[in-house]
Length: 227
Image (cartoon, one colour):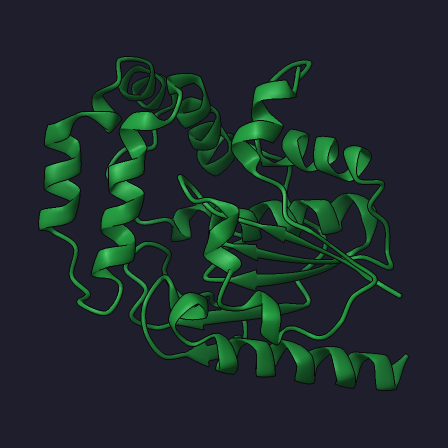
C-alpha cells in the first residue's frame, strides 16, 4: 500500500488538512509533518530553498516512487520538488511550480530577510493590514487565525519559509501529477497548465473537502487503472 505525505503551507499547521483527511482514499500510512518542527531540527548545508528542503524531507521519510504527496500552497511547491528528486506522486492544492505565480510585493532576498529577522512581518501593524485587506468572507476567520499565529512563530522559521518560497532553485524537469486550484485565489495565481477548478479561494480544499477528495480519488483510480 502507498504512503501519503501531507505538506502544509506558509505559516500554516497540519490542521489545515483536517477537513480533507477523513475523505481521502485509504493509505498504508499517513504522514503529516509540522514544518516548524522539521525546520527547527534541520541543519542545512548551504542555501535553504525548496529543493534542499525537499531533499531533507525525502531522506527523512525515505520517500520514493510509490509514495503520494499532497501539498497546499508552499507545501505544493515542496511536493513538486520531492517528486523531482524521488519520482513520487505530487498533488498540488492551490500550489505552484512557477514562483512568479506568487502574488508578492517584495521578492528581493535581503529585503525578505530583513523583514523576517526584524520581526516586521509579525508586528501588530502587519497583522492589522493583512486582516483589513483580506477579500473573502468565507475564509476570513481561517485567515485571521493564521495572522494571529504569526507573532508566535520564530523569526528564523519565518525567514526559512520565505527562503523556501522565493529562493532560487534549479528548474523542475517533471510536472506535478494533479493540480487543483480556485480561480479566485488571490495569493497564488492560477496555473498555466491544466488543473481541476475548485470553488472558493486559496483555502478551497478546506471549505470544499468533498470536491477536493473526489478529484484526488478519481485521479488515483484512473492512474492505477492505466498502470
